[in-house]
Structures are given as structure tokens and as C-alpha cells.
Image (cartoon, rainbow, N blue to C red; front, side, top):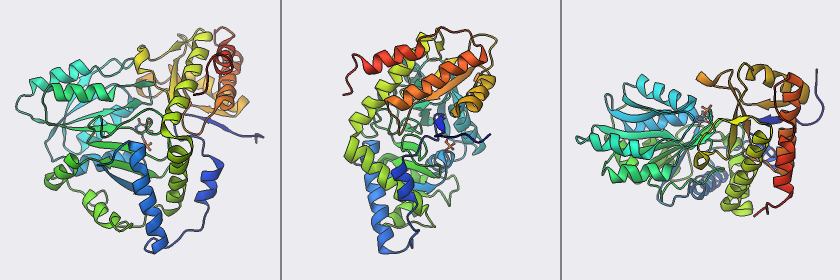
Length: 393
Ligand SMILES: *Cc1c(COP(=O)(O)O)cnc(C)c1O
């Protein structure tokens, strides 16, 4: 049945796209070899640097999803048979690992508890053991969107340094960029991988790499074959505001608008505060329902989404189906080994207090409608937090 009113897109990406970004994208497409395009491209390429909190890094923008940006990170920096350290801490980490293996990369996989952040002391131990420096890269996910656990990237950097290990540090910031504090330069990240449809508030279609000097240097000698993803070709064309092939011109209009909103209007510090505050309200709601937040370590709570454990014997897919049909809201599914067990509330991107209240109300009504045992009062707890003693900034 057609539904009236706005659809609530509360999955952890794609996220709700602000009307002004949609309007920006609807501008007429222009010649991507002309001067107007060059100005747009430069504004996007330079404008993203503060979003990654880098001055030294180079940003590359592909017409691709985040998966493409993963591939770009791998093929530009590694050679067949190289060893890397990766982590079994979620669905997306698993997909990235499979991709690395498909390129003939030898993955040392660290088993992890999916309900906690990556343990930096174990990273240090693993690297200290590798005295021959066989490990060429440490590759991890900042905010694991399947579990709602955000690992501490600054701490992992310190662990790499403590082991005095020269491995590249490559981080998936797909669902943290523009939501959680991420500092490419200060945290010594060599390659960050991102995409358009999460914290950047755009539709899907752009894959991003932010690349530091050490990774750029590594790309000169790395031997995996690359063509479409070549940083070298990108950098050569980008220098004058162009691309080696047709870029996603209209999405770049949207990206320029998103950059203005995040960096110049709201300000990144405020963006992070907003995500933190809304996430805290969501967590209070979950506790109010008497349900369990999947993440067990409060220092690693994700501020872009909350994964909620269904009570034993209750299927998240059936619950989400009811919420979609009855309340026109999409919630995130349980992924990989969490299928059937966990649903995810996305609270990232273009989002505010009342949107969160609407989303949480949909969850609470859905729990009742589906018959899931829970306490009333989750939404009330969120309202009390948002309306009461929690100043906006
Ligand atoms: C969404 C997501 C991806 C995958 O991005 P696609 O655009 O679907 O290819 C990768 N990593 C994380 C953490 C994500 O949330």
C-alpha cells in the first residue's frame, strides 16, 4: 500500500539526504573537461581534507561504492603475496578481508569479540612478534556498522608505534566519517576509505580514499595490477581539476553542498557532538525497553548507529518487516552471524532530535505490535534526556 508522509530511512547508510543536497544534485550536468567543472572538482577535493582532518593527505574520488574504495586501497599499496593484519570483528571487516584474499594477499586474521572494540595491546603484541616486518599493512574498520562498535583508532596507532612497526595503517571510515571524530593526520592513518552515502549525507555513488604521503610512496613500488583505481592517474588529472574518466558530476554538486554544511555551517565539532548526543538518547531508549545494546564496552559505543540484541527466540527480520509495513521505517538488518539476532537503528547523517524521537517511537510501537517482551518507557527515557538536562552544545 502506498504510504503517505516521509519514509524513515534509519539504516546505517544510505542515510536521509537533505533536500538542499538533492536540489544541488539536480543541477544540469556540465562538461567534465570544462573550467566550471574544474572549479567544482577542486572545491570537492580540497574541501574534503578538513573532513578527514588532514592537510598532508590527498583525496581521491571514484564513481563507486565503498567497496570500490576498499579495492583502490588494496591494489594501490600491496603486492601479490604480501601479508597484512586484519580483524574478525564484524561483517564489513569480513568482506574487506575476503577482498584482500581474492587479490592474493596473505591475511593474518586476529580473532575478536564482535561485542568489543579491537584490543590495541593485542595489535602491539602481534606486530612485535613480526620482527622481520613481513606484515605490510594493518587494516581495520573504525566504526563496524554491523555491530555498532567503534574501535579506538588513535590507540591502535599508538600500538603500531609502540611495536616500532613500519606497516601501513589503512582504516575503513565508511560509517564514521562526518559522524565520529576521525583524525587522519594526528592518528597517523595512511589510507582512509570512505563513501558518499553515510555521514556525508549523499546518495550512494562515490567511493573515497584519503591517502597520506607514506602510502603514496608505497604505491610507486606496489605490484598489484590496477587501472581504473590507479592513484597515480587520478593524481595527475586531479592536479588541474579533472579526472581520468567521466566522474559522477552531479554527485560532486551534492558533495560540495555537504562540505559547506558540515565544515562551514554546522562545524565538524558540532557535528560530532550532535551524533554523540543523539546516540546517547538512543542508548537510553534501548535500556528503557529493557533490551540489550550489542556493544558491551561503553568506550566503544558507536555514535552513528545502535545495534540492539533481540530477546532470545525473537527474530529481528520479522520485527523489521512489521516496522516497515506499519510505520514506513527501514531499520538495519542483522548481518553475517548476527542475522536474525540483531537489528540496527541508524542515527547518522542529516538527523535531529525530532527525527530520532520519530524513529525511536517506531521501534517502540513495532516492539509492541510484534509482541516482543519489553518495558514501556524507552522513548520516554530518550525524551527526558533530549528535552531535559542535556544542553545541545
Ligand atoms: C556501508 C559500509 C561499507 C560498504 O560500502 P558500500 O558502499 O556498500 O560498498 C563498508 N564498510 C562499512 C563500515 C560500511 O558501513
